[in-house]
Length: 133
Image 1: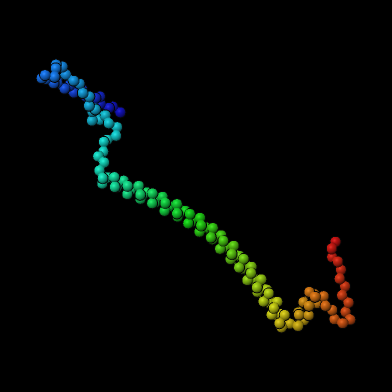
Image 2: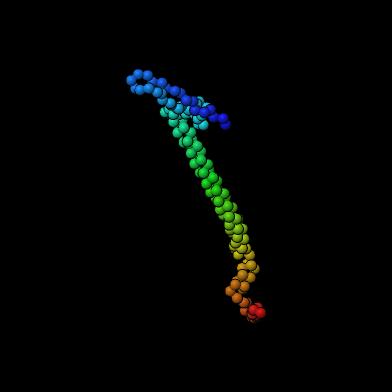
């Protein structure tokens, strides 16, 4: 990184100011590490648009990630609800079969009454055993 040494430009003044000369140092053209850029309003507006565009992209990405997480959660809730619905529909079909048998099958009705209410026919004796071991 060979930067050129500063130039010494002698300034000679003549006249009533006195005798002698002044030395002034100006940097050489290759001495500056960062070029001096003229900042115009156009460049400033373009920079502002660029920053706004990047900010909008980051915001949209964050919103997309949030929406994706919510979508996955809703899919899990839907799967659980569908499983509950399938179980409820199976239970409903079973109960509809029982109801249909209660409406049409007198032997089944008698069996259910005897079992749940403990009824017996005249002359029958019901023995109940405690099954607790």
